[in-house]
Image (cartoon, rainbow, N blue to C red; front, top):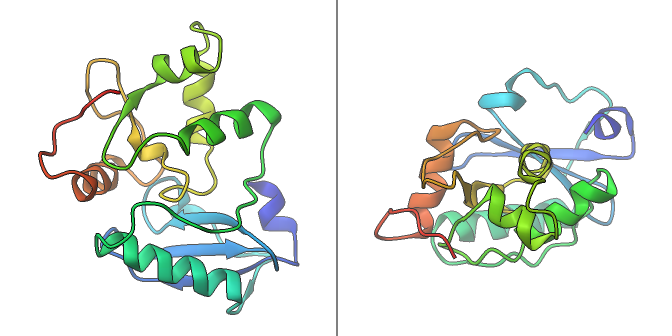
Length: 172
């Protein structure tokens, strides 16, 4: 995510949401980040970013508003998550977790072909630069417990609650 902070060609727009203010960050062609007002992103600043609107940011804002209003389950946005090849593989796999469902770090590691890589999967999951859209909140502990989330566990619980009516973790 440091590349985002140093790339002057990126711009941002803040938006209110039920989980607090979100900072949407985009290039001219794709969404590259979503920062939470709380949690790990609280200390970040927009140094090197330009505050301005763009078609990508407006589309992201609209689709996030629809998601929070329970009118959207899948996002249709151009994305450019910046990370290592392994991180991008994990993030691609996260996109396959259905709305309202959850999985575990171990199950993701197994899906990626290495059952012993759950810790690496957890680190990649925690480095996801585009949370909500790339649904890292849908990854929980093998025992069904909520585990780390960049926006904080309360926000993770809110997002999971929004996506399911029974509010009980379900593994697929």
